[in-house]
Image 1: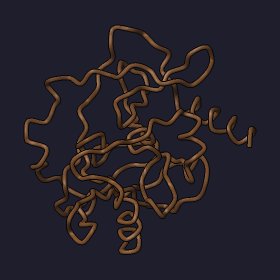
Image 2: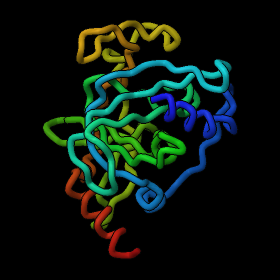
Image 3: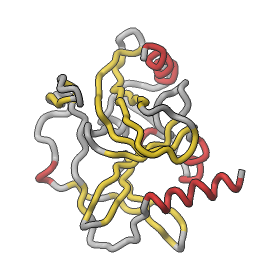
Image 4: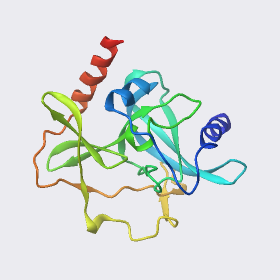
Length: 209
């Protein structure tokens, strides 16, 4: 784990703690720049100091469920600087996500929130919601970014983001609670993309290379 923290510190040296500018990637770029694509469940979250304690990142431990492309162990980690702020995604312990993970030199997801999707169920449909709040939809038979889902006011956390509270890891120990608000569908009825649609999208990218 120490080696991974050193790796993310190298990546974070160019990132400001007060303002983050993240390049906007196309979906093709998110797919093609990922070294591992997989689904998994967040089982632990912890704050870790980087840059000699000047900054903090949240490191999430992921139990890998299904490997779609690349190579990754049964468990792995991803890390984000200032999770929940300035476009940095905030993951929830116990929830399932689709990850487009970068190489170990960065130990994060491609484009931060652009490369991680919460696997949700909305009105009996599987909906993939990015760390930036956007859905994945099918438009003219192709994978595309859809509208952002609105967060239900009743499910928004009432505690300040800098006081995330206490959650429990799978072993019962206390952990940082990393939560996302539940999403509800808009009045539109888009064709939400499924994980099978994502697999076809990834396979198509392999054929091009």
